[in-house]
Amino acid sequence: MRPTRPAVLVALAAGIALLVWGLLQAVYGSLPKLPWTMAPTMLLLALGEGFTAYNLWRRIRRRPGTRPVEPLMVARMAALAKASAHAGAAIAGIFTGFVLYLSSRLDKDVPREDFFVSIGTLVAALTLVGAAIWLEYACRVPKGPDDDRDEDASPPDPAHW
Image (cartoon, rainbow, N blue to C red; front, side, top):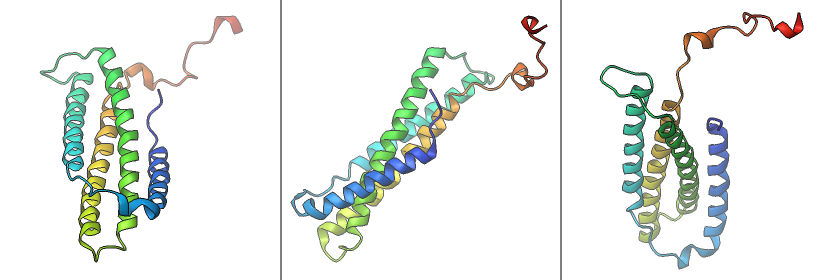
């Protein structure tokens, strides 16, 4: 599994934002008010991933007072981090689309409330993406003394003598 590339997350969010903005042009009037509960939920997820990232980072680097970590758990956390980063980027794209659409309709009560809910949820989604990237970084195994060696400094292959 390769590390998450920020360009992929930005492209995902931008594409979804444009799609949602275009869709809202046609259907916003028939939608119910946006629920405010999504922002605190994502902030709690981000807090959990941030806490896990910090603890996992310490355990992988064998800081004093920590237990060794099982490799399978690290792989699971890396998969969770990658999934959370992509989900957070998709949600950020959705609410960026809402923000773009609603920014010109702030003179009415319901669109103004939805605008502020969208801003809060967008910030929470970006926080989740940041925590997920940090968790993915924490899952990396640090380089050992043998990893710094040049490939040219390796002993010659006896088959090529």
